[in-house]
Length: 244
Length: 388
Ligand SMILES: Nc1ncnc2c1ncn2[C@@H]1O[C@H](COP(=O)(O)OP(=O)(O)O)[C@@H](O)[C@H]1O
Ligand SMILES: [Mg+2]
Image (tube, rainbow over all chains, first blue to last red; front, side, top):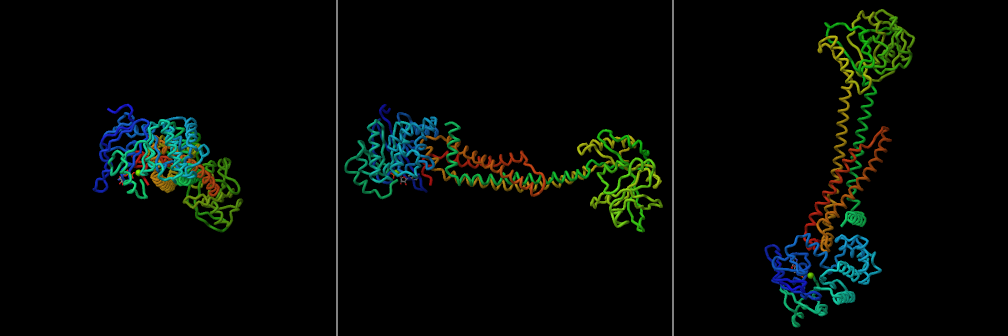
């Protein structure tokens, strides 16, 4: 039984894609533990299975095999609608591609998770405005994503992730599409959130960014291993220009 | 999430992609406009044809005794039919083919002996002079009213009141000329000489009535009048094969079946355009949903349930189809008013047809908006997110 303090408990998780005839084992027997208020970085080269792992952690995808407890609850047997509710209440996503809705203003984007909780629009907008203020976008609330810089869009996404006070923040290469200055600002926000007690899982191929996290694991070819100082150099060498 | 939020969300989405919304509505607009317009034009046309026919005296009933060995009908007895049930007026008819002389010309035509009521029963009018009256009837006067063909053939003019014609050796004073009817059917009233019934009895040495005309009180009571007349003739003859009563509603029925075919044809054409419009809606809906799979993925990843996605697309499709349908109705109304002016006839929009056209469009919009949306809503969020 997992201890009460564990936010993520993964045991022997496997995920296989079949392309044509060939099975592709993307995750092999992954076991992972994240405690409350942890800040864990998952480091690995492109194509190593980082995003696949994050999608399973975030209940966007389901594993083929293995056991996964999120916040003490088994989520592998939940229905589609139950998973939607879990994502809505427990998880805040920060994607590399921001994944904002292009037709909606920053304010409406940030408010959307609350709308799906049934919060009244006025209240949802009030809280979205507060969240946007926290990430420094008080003066950009009416802007649509295409009227914002990459760094600003990612901050809208963070505001949207934070608005439900989720148990877990999941960031998949949050700085991958940003220049280094914006990237540093985003990391600054994440550190602030960690200091405020949030549990954060950060996925990255960037050794330097990973080194900012107090806890680290390495993923390579679908296998998760504890981080040791020699290995990441290899990992970053393998990294091409393209990241998933 | 409340329905108001869903509607608000749908409106935001509709307004934020105006071109797509317009294209979706276009099919509905064209379909509803053309159906309402074409059906109303077809209905208007058939109504005006029917009303023209009923103007021509659709209350007229023709009665004939077809057998020789039945009791005679006397004029006084026949007149008791007037005002009985739905029968309004009755006029006997004695007719014969004759050769008329006048102004040194001769002309073969029909002479018809009847009573003054005949004018109204047949819906005729006198262009010049007067029709004969009860006095002419009582005194068996040798007066006549002639059709325009007779006038022109004998006198080369329609203005021949006051002249005389000779039939079977008797001189008749022309007291009136009928209005030209232009009808070229057999038994045209342009080609006849009408004289008082009593005069005809004497002239033709024939006192039995074997044929008479009657009018119903209105075009709606023709059937009832026909029954009254049939009952009267059956009482008289006790043999239902010895008489016949027929009405012009039979002609009317033929005409209205023609115009119904016309309506059906136009309605068919309009339905095809509605169907094509529906296919347009279908296309746009399919395209826009697959375009929006990624949006569905994002919404699901932050907590939208299947039901939320479906509600959103349903409300969007409904809003678009209803707005499109209303625009279609407005354009249809404008088109109908314009067509009414052009065709110089009264046209009106048929409410059931308008509702059916709109209902059809709305159903198409919903079905083809909802089907792909429900497919997308069933996708795993990660698959929807990865969708390009
Ligand atoms: N839906 C999928 N179907 C088939 N193969 C996939 C799918 N998603 C990911 N993969 C494959 O799994 C491997 C890991 O992908 P991913 O988890 O995105 O890697 P990373 O995020 O570490 O770059 C890649 O080789 C990728 O091609
Ligand atoms: Mg990736």
